[in-house]
Length: 200
Image (tube, rainbow, N blue to C red; front, side, top):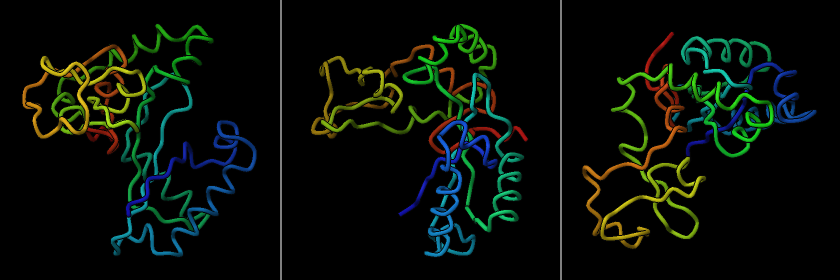
């Protein structure tokens, strides 16, 4: 089992401000417990990856330099080991989209994502090679489309289900896209595996 844990910053104040008082200390304790079980050991096969996403309407910094900072602060200051940091952009949907709207920042953030779009990220976005399945078995091009209710499109199946998968022609199938998709193509790119390009 590979563990992927969200830790939005390596600084206690930032984590507690975003997630609540005491969350940083509980997160460090949990990561140490995983380390004690062998997770995060670079010589082992029990992977512990951490996830970073910005606290506001900005793109993540370069994943490689941010990972170095995480390793230095978490390792030296807290004795925590991990295998990889995954830097993800925030997509303007759901809770984050609502926060942007309430602060009058939605249009500016979508504009930032569009301006930072890089064509070279298109070949690596997760919707090109993965599917998302909801709890009822319905299929989506990605988990973000799933959260928005934008189902996988097939001409002969109005709402494809997991049971239909063996008979679906997915090669060359159009992917449902909208403005939130720029979150995966902006800057260094973003996917469930972290940055798509090395920007640092």
